[in-house]
Figure 1: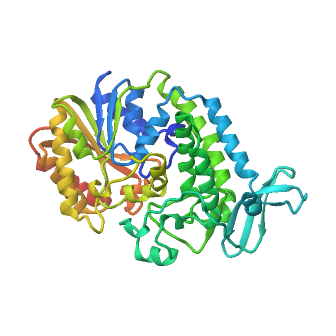
Figure 2 (figure 1 turned 90 degrees about the vertical axis):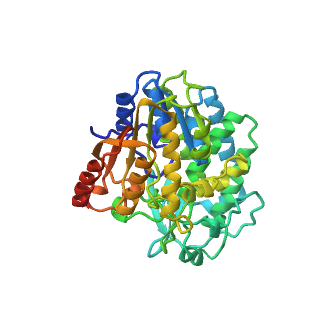
Figure 3 (figure 1 turned 30 degrees about the vertical axis):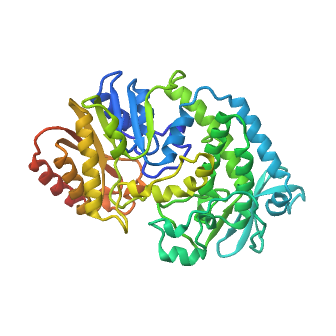
Length: 462
């Protein structure tokens, strides 16, 4: 089955390692009946929740990451007044636009027509430049200008989480950034604008509108950080950038994007909040409020509250060892979200992952505990479908140990090629990098022959 273009609801919020939605739905429809209950204990960006609804199944999903909770709540909302989102967002944008610090730092005169224009970005890439789009000339211009950063006093709330408390932050990164606060991921100029913008959003009295504005705000955070770099000139994309690798990294190249433009796009553009809401109605239907349930928290803890043999299908994409540090990476967004909702914090101690403080034994043990609970809640004739990929045999050994010890057996292994390489597989080689393995499991006796055959084929690809 070929991967299809992702609907807007899957492009609205960045999340590492997203799977092909139509292939995911294929497994949901193949291994469960209409109105069946589908469980995902590591739901990530919410795909199982959405595709279960699309397939007329009832989702139960779990994730430790508040980003999952926010995505699902926003994109299944059917009561928010979209005209109010337009109105409140525009008022906030205009207030920032008319402020002295924004005018000083992010406006200039077009060198061709002398009209006032908005600076889209500052860049330092061999030379220092600004880029702006002149609406009067109908052109995009990049001009040399000495790079300097604004030095404003920030009197609004900003996140203060210590970078040194994030496990995957390297000592090299800390030396480069030279500050032990997550707020240092943004320049003073951008941090000032972001703090003012967020303060205005949090004053919104309509809770549903506030949630949508916060959703748009967090989408702009990574794009306005110091971790984004200028694109190659050959790409001919002078206005855009991305946080392209699943790691905290700093480059000598600088792309400092205008936060207000990033926020405006996150609300109004083709992959913005409003288009995402409209696409959700079109893709999932209107009457889905309260259809299914999502839990914010540890899968090991929450699964204990689910009844024995009550689930028709389990489908999930568990963490692949240490390949992507989901919780750590999400602090770019979650460190801000805590101010919006005190429950929106990540308990990193409970994350099933490998890092410098969590070894293979921890990862294997916690994965096994989860799988044992999954076996308990799955109906005797139910299926357990999971994806996995790694370039390390030890990761596979850990996965197969958890499957075996929890009382599951693997009935089928499917090697699925994808259109693009997932960030989860970026370090993998050859055929592994643009593919996933799907394991179809049931309750039953373990068959070692399937694993022996898998390793033979896997080694060939590797």
